[in-house]
Picture 1 (tube, one colour):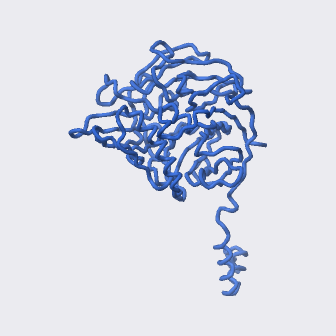
Picture 2: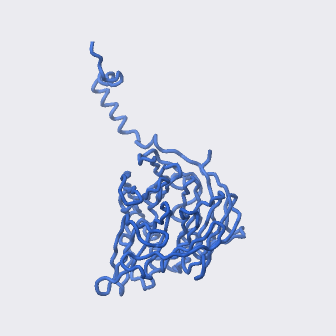
Length: 404
């Protein structure tokens, strides 16, 4: 007798009456699909630095990286230095500083742990990386070079990550466009450690009028906070503001896969639009010309951050996860495994508000919250009147680890 290959459970399902099947389908449709894929991850505070009662003062903390001793490197762009804090939050050393000498930069908004173990302090303009040995001893400094003019001093270095023995960077270049206009070119590009350009992963150009400078959120959007390097050495980024689609590329630029999620754009309220306008006005103020207007969009970005964890998982922050927060939840991230398959949503449970505070998710799973970071940035850019900045805001750096 020939054996029926269909599983017994499937055969039993076929024997159900039509009314029963209809009821079963209705139940399946009414159960929230993500109800079984949402996990709550309580965050346990390890330490905090800064604040009213601390001897350590922070001006504007823009970036946080893990240190080899279990502590953190904290970049303060207002003070133009890196604070090295140990695993308990105590100050070990202050690295770098303002200036033109070894290990110094004239302006800064990024730092990077290079593949050879050195720490790089990123100078915005002219784009350069001042390298420091792990103990803070100055090493060398290299310029970020333009593809078209290697001697140009108008390449801006905006952010960077180690990419094997090379550097992955977000670079900008301003070029004269049609009469009375300028073009801002933005690129996610790899460089060698002499600053020579290697591979372009994505790019964008935006034209703006010099005499009447209008800053548009859509036009100047890029992968600023939507980029990471995986532990395998692949580049992960979300190229489009309003699409939930991440590209995973090998170091040579080959697209390995695209990770997609359900695009859930969060509509901004009038108050949220105004907050967005103030933040973008602070960015626009850095262009060195009168700002005729700031145009913002009606929705938050689909993807607001990408974090590559050391075990290969990706945690993706979204506009909806940052905004629609249950009580006591800092934000909700989408978790993907190393192959790019969706696993679950994770609610990070801790005090804070992404609209006011900066959230840094480190490869080892620690989460660092910088309270008051949004106001601190507006204060540093001298847009108090424009942005309604509270001058009494004192930054705190709070380090959490996942409970359990």
